[in-house]
Image: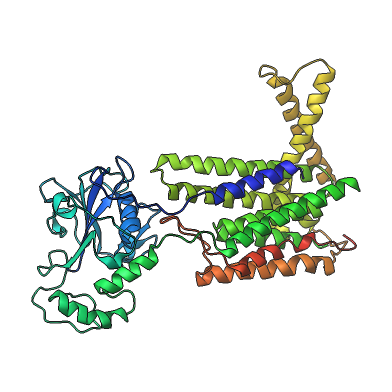
Length: 273
Length: 258
């Protein structure tokens, strides 16, 4: 075997180790392009001001940016083309639309005056620019029959003196998360009384009461509707900046190089013999 | 060494490659294939053809990656395409190794009578690439002796026609000689039984263990056999599976009586 083949294989390994992971979150100043992202599910509404890393980004990339800047938990499926999970709601699998049917994350685009237009184009093909408002709502139905997120104007979400968004979601600034008592985005009936800790789907009541329940909720398992604090903690853990290749990965690269070297040595010995 | 042993090795190596797109398993697997090739290849044309399989693998990676342009181009989709191309390249390398270390004639004699013609065709197909390479070399030299430069495009026919003719003649000659030996005519005897000795165990047992490890990991859904590309993160790497891949290099160990 020629050493040339070894070089080709080394180039393979080097090329695959190249992809840089993790996006740096840019400082949120008034000059940089920003877009508003609204995520609504079961009475919970997230309003995030997301700094764009280019003049135009796709709707999917906006979610990734929100994940980096605000710790928004997200997962895509179908080869990275469909939004499967946001803020812990939805199954993170390749076939999530079938798994969670009839519920799914419906994609809305702001019409410029706070209202919403159901998008007929997938988020991988849309372009989000400075000042745009993007919305995602969990539920069933298509088009006008699907519940839209609550009205949101860009100026409400991205205020002028926006503080720098940090990956630590516990500070609560730079993002606006509230319980929507009208339940416009959710399936919960608005008149229900305080729910038992076991039922994670309904959130009514004041913030103080929520904070009391937070202690219980922190111990709940995933798949239930977590409290604000627990959700932020979970989000920070799942979308935390990547730690880099694991020791096993480096070991595998070492093993590969060792095997290639062995091959070269054996070939030389064979040729000499 | 029993010819089936190499089939076991190639089958499990191919199975492991099919089960994963994790580059940290695929790259050591490629290295394993290279080591086994260098250590156990037989002399002759099929061994030289291994180079072709590696080149075909590189072409597969490039082709699969360029298909990404058909859809949205993101870091994740490009990486996913490269990994799928890499899996294909490793598969091709495994086939190339099998071609270079296995003895298709001995393997052919073991095939059940029902599959005799099919396995005969498969064996001949595998030998097509090396035979053609040899023919091209011979024709090129013969034409150069006549003063015909076969490097130019317009003299392509001076190269292609003799090679094709040669292929036809070889096929006809092969058919006649096989016919004379009574192939496909009924009862075949097992004149020389194939031995399954220690050397065969050295190849078969580690392959079986490695294959079992990958199958178990796939069934349990662990060890990041299909790493996530959306979001793009460094995949987990199980030391056990890397060790299993290294096990597949066992045939390269020096042994007596090859």
